[in-house]
Length: 106
Image (cartoon, rainbow, N blue to C red):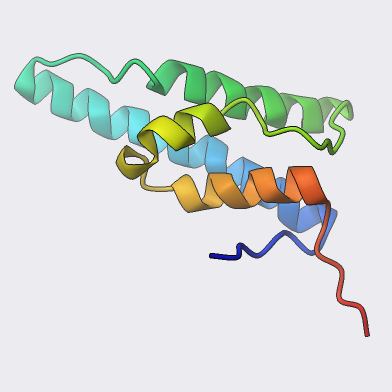
């Protein structure tokens, strides 16, 4: 499956901002569920949240750079992506990070 990459820096930043929201929302949902079932958070949640937040903070500070390597959260996606409702968004962010913005060549 080919993922669409962001077309503009603004769109890419919005995707990262959405990922920050999504992981926070996931934490809140799991918190509610764990209170009901008395279970623990998945071990991957905190590292996922920290790695997304780090990218967002780098963007806000003006220190973000595209690269050729996978973003740190991709290992979590490979191992637990079926448990993460916004895994496709994270894959799109990673693909844009690795390959740059999707530019229409007309």
